[in-house]
Image 1 (spheres, helix red, strand yellow):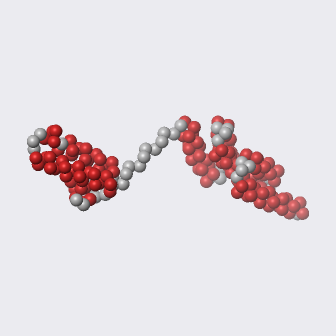
Image 2 (image 1 turned 60 degrees about the horizontal axis):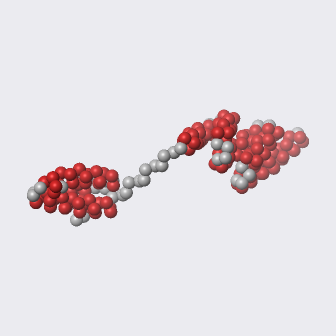
Image 3 (image 1 turned 30 degrees about the vertical axis):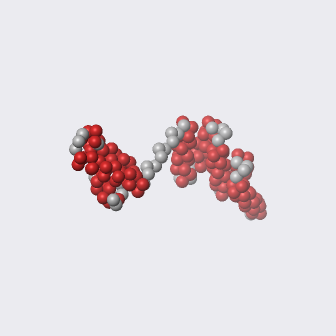
Length: 176
């Protein structure tokens, strides 16, 4: 028996999902089961064909994805805040981003991922302050970013590059 025939026997379109195959089999099997139909030989033969088709389609149909694990309240909070943070960063609302990530860091102080987000937000704010000429505030936020996430080598390299650039900008502003 070929898969198209199996789908037809179960009353399904070609390529139906794993869950649809199981559901269709159960519905039809209830109607054709020998216990329900007694001595009806045609129903018995049809039930055997149906079972054969079902077993073949279980091998062919894509399996159902496993159910998503339940999230804890903290994980849900992190996901919600992360979505808000992404939105704020897209809009360049960095002070609001800092407030949001600092509040989350107070709520979950030992979460490494939050520390990383916090370091990135501090770095972005420090860079923006540097571009606007607020060198002292920029330096404070850049150092804060270094302290908050000292293991993030790429962040540290970016911060060091920004600090060197800021020193050059400061020297240039003094000469003028």
